[in-house]
Length: 59
Image (cartoon, rainbow, N blue to C red; front, side):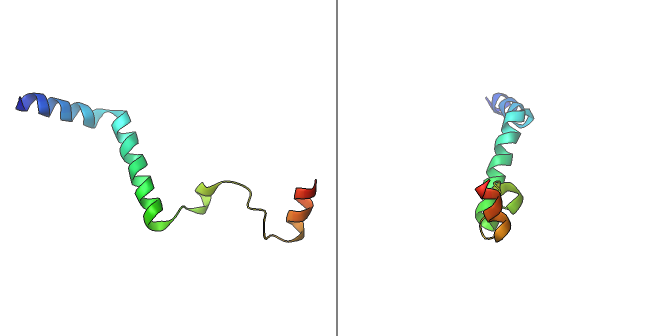
């Protein structure tokens, strides 16, 4: 019984899917604690940039 639990734990820790999941949870926690970094927000953020934004969006 104990060996089975140990084997399953080692198998889980070696799994790339497990590490990907832990990474995503860590990223979500960081976003909640510190906000989403600008480089991860995406988009063009043209609003509030004056005439250049109005010219680009009119084309």
